[in-house]
Structure formats: C-alpha cells, structure tokens
Amino acid sequence: MGRLSTACFIAAIVALSGCGDLSCPGSNPLRSSRSNAIADLKKKAAEYESRPAAGDRTARLGQIYYDLGMKYLEDGNWDQAVASFEKSMEYGKKSAAVHYYAAVSYANRGKELEREEDIRRAEYHYRQATAINPDYLDAHYGLAILVYYEKGDTATGTGMMERIVARSRTYYRAQFALGKFYYEQGRPEKALSVYESLHSELEKKTGDSALLKEYREQCAENIRQLMKELSGN
Image (cartoon, rainbow, N blue to C red; front, side):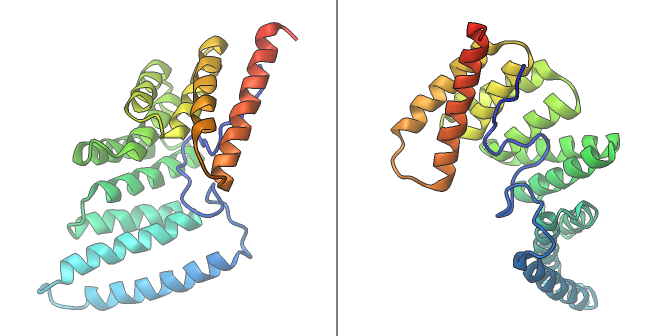
C-alpha cells in the first residue's frame, strides 16, 4: 500500500504551535519569545512559592504552572511540561484542559522514549479530561490515537474514532484519522467512503483559508490514490 495524506494527523501529537507539529526550528523568533516568557513565569512561580499559604497564592500558582507547562509544550520540552502540569494540579488546577495537556506531554515523551509508564499516565489524563468534559473532542481524539497506536488496540481505537466522527462531522481530523485507520487495516473501500464523504463536506464549506485548502487537497489526493489502488492500476 502507498501512504495516505492525513491533513495534520500526527500519531501521538496534537498540533499546538504555528509549526503544526511542535518542531519549530531553533532560530524561530517565537522560540525566543517563549524563552523570555518561561523565564518570567519561573520568576513569578518562585515569588509565589516564597509567600505564606494564604490569599490567592494557591490559585495563582496553579495558573502560573499551567501557563509554564503550555510554553514548555510548545517547545517540545516534554519533561518540563509534564512537571509543570503536575505542579499545576498539585495547586488545585484540575480542569479538563490541564489533564488534556498533561496527557499530550506524557504521550509525546512516552512515544519518544518508548516508556510504557508515560503511555499509561497519558491514558489516565485523557480519560480524566473526558470525564470532566465529555464534549472535549480533542481529548477523545488524543485518547483514540493513543489506544490505536501506542497500546496497539486497533479495534477499540477505531471504534472510538468512529464515535468522534458520529458526534461531529466538522471535526475533520477525526475523519482523516478514521480513513487512515481503515486503510491500515486493509479496508480501502471503507477508507474511500470516509474520504469521499469528507470531500463532499469540505466542498460545501465557504471561505478559502490555508487549512481548509490543505484539507481539500489532501482529501482529494487520498481519494485519487485509493481509487487507483482499488482499480489495480
């Protein structure tokens, strides 16, 4: 089989930065800006850590460590991102978003280092995020990717992605991922059906944003490739 385009689909990563895959080159001015922001946040954290446990100290530290975690996440510094999000939760900030981004950090580190414990922690935090906010599609998506690829449970992962698509036809990357799942399982007809349906939906969308254009082009390319393979050419 060939390789299908996936339109911003990344096995364990949820795109969070302008680079799309958290791999900005070191010379990128955004990285320098984040470095300054990290230094400022670490200074604020140290200031609040030194204060007596009174007033808004706990809430402020929870937010500071969350913001710090986001900066580390954008830099792909998984160790520091994990540590920051865990500190944020220690200080009482246990929202769906904190659990979600902690899961993303653990999942990326676990994938890179092939660390099973990190994958388990990522799954735990994804599930916490979806329990707190059942409508958090990013968390459902991340969990489905984790289950399919990192845990190797393709049947469960596929079912989870199917449910995301059923819940929201405009969550396009879930449709790209579902088509890819079918394709990898040797079900090209099912994959083609997904991409044809998605292409029809994308053609109805107004506007000409760069992302929408990319989705249309990659979806059309997937259809062309699948039709070619299915025809035996």
